[in-house]
View 1 (cartoon, chains in turn red, cyan):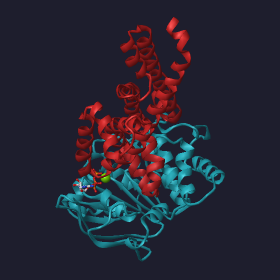
View 2 (spheres, chains in turn brown, yellow):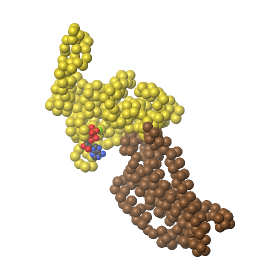
View 3 (tube, rainbow over the protein chains, first blue to last red):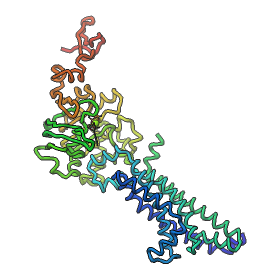
View 4 (cartoon, rainbow over the protein chains, first blue to last red):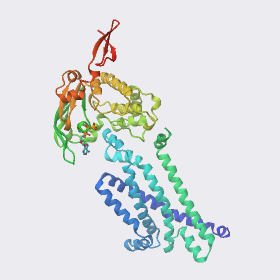
Length: 214
Length: 270
Ligand SMILES: Nc1ncnc2c1ncn2[C@@H]1O[C@H](COP(=O)(O)OP(=O)(O)OP(=O)(O)O)[C@@H](O)[C@H]1O
Ligand SMILES: [Mg+2]
């Protein structure tokens, strides 16, 4: 408690820093994964290679990647950009599979009828494929949210500030309260973001509940 | 007028789904394609709005080859009813119907007004307008499917087993309503079913399709029923079924029509 009283400011600051790394990575992964997932669903031959590739990405250990990305891209090892890129790689690896599954889950009947009515491919993507993919996509996004929020902490090992800094610092200086605070707030953030996903999902898919209520 | 001119469709796996088929659908008439599963009926229907392009041969609408038309614009000008309605599950009833006028450039309020009018046309209560398709019965969904196909007042209507998923009683009433609608609207309708009774109920002209789209016989319902061209058609139409072989009986002075086994069907009016 005493540690907490003295460090509320830095706790807040690190929470903000943590979110500033996790949220952009999550959103970026979504933006990257949706077109890939959609293409994988449309071009059946592309699906397996694409999924195999992202599977490989996911298998890369995270710490080496934190070191490798700055070398390859010539950015600072402790920069936010480095952390966001690394986090995006893992998030995308999960999200692509989920997006591909989500687009395959769109009923063929709905896609056919949209085409028959006279939707162009582009229009159909926005008005039919994407909205109907939301429920399955959301399940993947929730996994990405939780895993990304937790993965952010690894960056603290190489000095990228986040709530993980509280683990490394608290561990070195033997302050249990600091480690505990870092852990609890990380979990809280994950839960809050997960909750936001659930609420957003509900707001975006009113028809799904209408079908259940029947 | 829709004209199929020696069309063949070969899907990727080789054997032709439809081989060298020719027929016409006269303007303002209802032509019903009837045949067993896999005979190529859906394939033929989809050639009209270019969901499928023929491997060879041509499909002409009013003498214009459809492959020269932009598919998206072509589809917007043709009403298409899919099996089980084919509604978009994430759009409400009124939105589902309004989509078509919207795609054709109507303003949002106009499209909505049009959609509500279409609900009246197909005999659905306007209270259903804000429901999602999953909250409707099968028969209601199919009516919405028909309403949507009619919403932009197309000259051509393609209907692929539109009443396939409802019970026989609802089915009869939907068929009856379609006939009534057709009497006033006078669309050019190409209708697909594998129910010969449905074909007899709706068609100006029936085309009996054998394997690979081969036309076993075409003719009016009466011709098909009274002069089946071959054993295949006779079998398909079931000319020997007891309910097709009607008899006249006398029940205390009233003339009763019965089937071959003597079950009463109705009374005779002269
Ligand atoms: N996209 C496709 N790819 C490959 N083959 C197809 C495709 N669509 C249809 N076929 C094949 O073409 C043939 C005709 O199919 P079609 O759907 O036109 O039949 P149908 O008469 O409508 O049958 P049903 O009464 O069962 O709806 C079938 O053998 C079917 O397997
Ligand atoms: Mg079919």
